[in-house]
Image 1 (cartoon, rainbow, N blue to C red):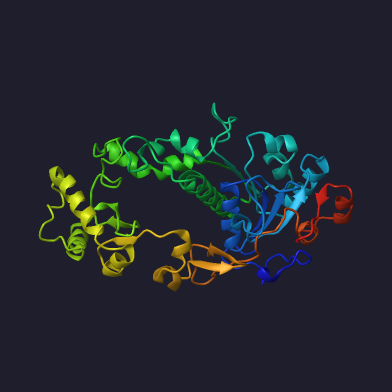
Image 2 (tube, rainbow, N blue to C red):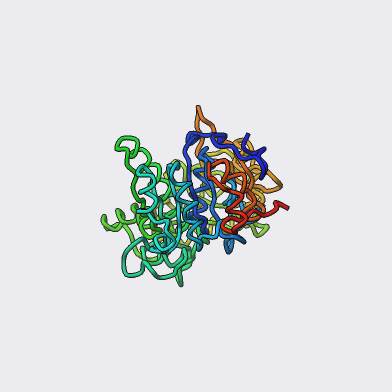
Length: 395
């Protein structure tokens, strides 16, 4: 199994999952690019992670789950000889993924033209915030900036005074890596028909705007207010909101449909005093009733009341608690491996199930010699002697 590999022993084609046999060259970055490559590796692809000597800022180390499932190779990409190594890797690969600013890969000699000259069927995946063109394409930015201009951040949060940003989940991973993987898989399918690869321009602004398609429909239909805590799904409705419990914890309530609302108010014990579900002018009264009732018991007590029912109520758990929730545990959604609690590969497949593979490299370049050799790169020892490639001890 790939999980048993050591820095001295790298074999291709040992992954599990439906992408077994697909070869991916990852030019290491941070955030959405690595997350996309983790998905590809989780699903069985052979991914080789090309890092700068010393590793990336904000990433790396044996705890970095976003680098799991593939070996780490350290190359000095400022050396033209390192670019030649990347092109050698690309020659027999299916995909390359890079997340640099537009034009940087071209300046390094590993842009789409150079790579596809070596391998016309290559799918070249580009991950950026703003996209490959447009007036802001060369500007720096981060998740909240990207989702800000798409109209998405404005509506997030249950505070009227200002928006609340959800860490980097919506932009980097929702609108970013997810759409990069969709694009790569679509391009791979098309390449099987045409025999030609293409560039996938995955921009967080594009993907986030696409995620927000439902809101576009609501606005088009005149059923949505561009004001926080004023709509059905943003906390404007008291039966789709979060409530504090007696122990200072919280419960999530999503009892939208009338039949689920009926179950919810019955189990909450307010069936005989609650206003009608759609009496909008009594929503403040309804919210106060729910809030007071939830404060009478602890989160765990309310969890037991609503467990497995159609009330659409669930406890809000910390990540460290989620692993022990009965449903999470039954499906083994989170598991401990190499001392780290982490998510299993997703989604699930009936015939080609995916399993966790190689753990994260403790240091950038921990697998340089073995991985380059396994990928058929010649003169690896010479590359190491010249400093084009760097091998570091795993410890």
